[in-house]
Structures are given as structure tokens and as C-alpha cells.
Length: 409
Ligand code: PMT
Image: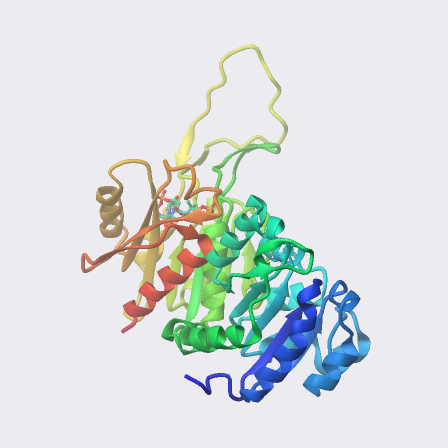
């Protein structure tokens, strides 16, 4: 276990806090273990420590600026994030933790965190009362659920005069923690996961809209978060991902080909086009089951009488594609159920000739539609079942893809 840090390329992020001085020693101790350390300082960190100190210690250029022309030409920040084996942020301030938990990327360090596919280790350090604040703890939970590895601050007397939890752990303790986590098979897998390398993955996500007139439509509350999380994770595992998205308000995952659609008919066309080149199709989209028989070209005026309209069924995308399925292809459907969860899911598995159905109980407010979190049960065509954790959709996506990887063996 002692040489797991050897030859590792580490980005050491330092944020603003009195404990920033301890990061100087951390650089040396990481180097003693054989690691190559590249330091990134936030603007606040530079109030406590200087780039010059870290440059002298690490013997590498210190990065501070998101928009530095010289740094961009020498080593772009994307390249820095791509080449890193891990990012360690020590100390991680309450402010930085809040930014990371919302996915902000408004300086170099937060951008690297969003770009990288390497594991991210955080060592928070702050005032004891800050650390205890529910909002900080909530941000920590969010980050843990997204896969950040976090070491709790140590207890003791703090620079601000208070006693309690908030101190940056001793450097030797941080080194042991890194070594322990990196030796753990789960972290190793996270670092080198190429379980979907070479696979072409098609994912649909979000709702569809079926227009009645130019300003009114039939839809549902899907946000696309579950599908986007799967797309991000499949891409991270080496897949070539095409994401067909209904109208959602989400950033495209980097490296993923995104096709925006509106109606079920559009979604069918886009999925059909991509399907022949696909090894795996995951249907997370909440497709409207019906569309209006008559679509008005102009806004329908209000009249003081009952409004009646006729709905016609939409095509079933999964069913249509299952008819074209070749032997090497795998088809995975989702089922959004409010009752007889597993029974209805199994029916869909059979009716749509799927390899796997993933069912979520959408009667529960804290999971499913429009929630950050989910919990699903996976039921495959051999009758095997597995329940995921109740966790952030990123984590659930990871557990789903672990299961799906097994479908190719
Ligand atoms: O987008 P989020 O806010 O993150 O929410 C995630 C989610 C709740 C939408 C997602 O987890 C989910 O459950 N997706 C499936 C939603 C759904 O419409 O389920 P269904 O049981 O009605 O459909 C079963 C399967 O058939 C689904 O894979 C669906 O994509 C597919 N289908 C349905 C209708 C249709 N016309 N064509 C289809 O291909």
C-alpha cells in the first residue's frame, strides 16, 4: 500500500484559509511518496500563501488563472485535468465546498474539478461553527453522493481561537488516507474505469412536448437529470455516447454528442437514426404517450364552453427499436411506476423485449422525477434483481452502469 502514490500526477488545489500553509508541507510529503504535484491556487488562497512558495516546493509551474494565455499555450487547463490521476483539495474552504456542490466553474480550480474524470479528494478546514452549519453539512453530503472522497477535519484548537472540529488533518494523516483510498479496489476502478471502452451508447432523456397550439403542450415533469447522469458516467467509462434530449435545462456532458428534440415523433426519428450504430440503448426519457390529433397553427382563443380534443397514441420508441435489435445490442428501459412497481416493470421488460428494466417508484417525492436523487430496482431478462442505493443520480447512474457492464459478458 505504501507506494500507491508513486508516479501519480496529482493536482493539489489550495483554497483560502489559514490552513493553506500546511499545503506546503503536503507538497513535500507527496513528493517523498514519489508523486508529481501540480499546484492550483484559488484567488483567496493567494491571500495566505504565494505561488512562488509552491513553485519552489513543487518544482512545477503553479496555476492560478482560468484565462492565462501563457498557461493555455503551455498546458491548457483541460489537459491538466485530463492528465491528472487525482485531484486533492487541501484545505477546502466552506466557500469552495459550496461552489463545488452547485457545480460552479468560475475559476481555474472549480473548472478543473468539473472537467476531470479523475477522483477528487477533499480535506475541508474551517471554523468549528462553520463546519457544524447545516448548509455546509448538506453540501458535504451532496459532494459525497457525487463520489467526492472527503476526510473529516480534525478536532483541536483552531487558528480563530475556537476549539473543536475544523482543523485540516495532519499531513501524515492525509497521506495515509490517500494511500488507503487509492489501495481500495473501488477507487482503483474509479481511476481506471474503461468498462464501456469502445461501446457506442445511445441514451434518451427528459420529457417530450406534444403541442396543441403554438404555446400550449402536453408534457411531464422530467428534467433529464437521470439520463444526463448516465450519459456522463458512460462517457467517463470510455463509451462513445449519443444523447437524445427532450426540452431540458441542462448543460451537455463534455465529450457527449447531444441531439435536441421536442416531440415523441422527433425523438423516435433521432433514436432510429442512431440505433444501427449502437451497442447499448438506455431509454430514460419520459415520452408523452399521446399527441393531439389536431394541432392548431394559431393560438386557440378562450371560449366560455367545454374544450374537447382528441388524443392519439405516440409511437413506442423502445418497442420500435426492439424489433430492429441485433444480437450484439442491449436494450435497457426505465419504468416510472406508482403502484405494483415490480409487477408492472416485469410486464414492460417482456412487452418491449428488453435486456434490463430499471424501475423507480415515482410516487415518492424525494426520488424519480425532478429530484437530485433516485433509487431504482434493476430487473434483467433472466429474472435477476438488484436495488441501487438511495443516492444522488450520479451515484445511481454509476451503479446502473456497473450492472449493465455485466450484460455484455
Ligand atoms: O428526468 P428526471 O427528472 O431525472 O427523472 C427521471 C425519470 C423519473 C424520468 C426516469 O428515472 C424514468 O423513470 N424514466 C422513464 C419514464 C417513463 O416514461 O416510463 P414509462 O414507464 O412510462 O415507460 C417505460 C419505458 O418505455 C421507458 O424506458 C420509456 O422511455 C419508454 N417509452 C415510453 C413511451 C413511449 N412512447 N416510448 C418509449 O420508448
